[in-house]
Length: 270
Image 1 (cartoon, rainbow, N blue to C red):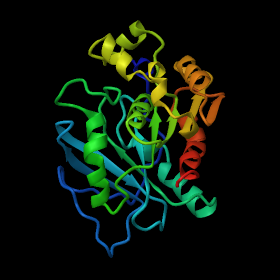
Image 2 (cartoon, rainbow, N blue to C red; image 1 turned 60 degrees about the horizontal axis):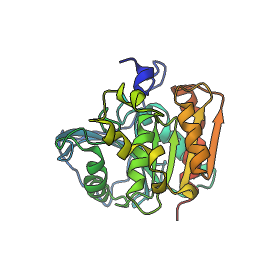
Image 3 (cartoon, rainbow, N blue to C red; image 1 turned 90 degrees about the vertical axis):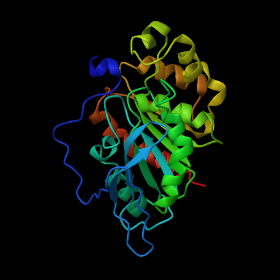
Image 4 (spheres, rainbow, N blue to C red; image 1 turned 135 degrees about the vertical axis):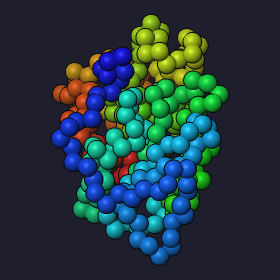
């Protein structure tokens, strides 16, 4: 399947790798030292029973932010991993927003969700269960607030973010280029959903009652292949922030709007 059809662009070749990240051995959960200052970016492998595999867990903090930060969960696009958010420059955006623009300090935590639109393809791999049952403990072990106040999703991650938010009490939700399908044949072509009923049960456009408009922000490029779904979400959900502007389904567009999306969630903490 091509990347455009899959709902995510490839990683750009010219994005510099963020330095200063740390890693731990696969499957371990290392507790945060009360005395050691946290790194702006930490990269770890942890074991997810819900997904039946080790997953990458990346914590991004503003520079000099300290411990016990509220958390926005970040859900990547299809064909990507949690590293997508480091490549897009989230750590530097966080530092700019918090240290220079007056946004309250918070962390962004990304985790690998596979390629199944953040829904369970079978009982052995359930990324939504990982988010709700396992991530809170992982956050607490790292000196972070265990209950995320918000969720950021890009492309396939936008589909997952809207599903994740539906089971929580009014979290802030920012979706960029959300991969939403207008018909079952279009959704079926992704080879993700077990059947049409699973798509209908998880499709945000068919479950708008689960979406809180006042805590939702939507960004999408005018040339994005998913723009029609984004326009429907905007028209029918009436989000607090809605931006459809020049741009495609690619890293250049996401870098452009990420500061606004993170300002949207961070500026509403509490």
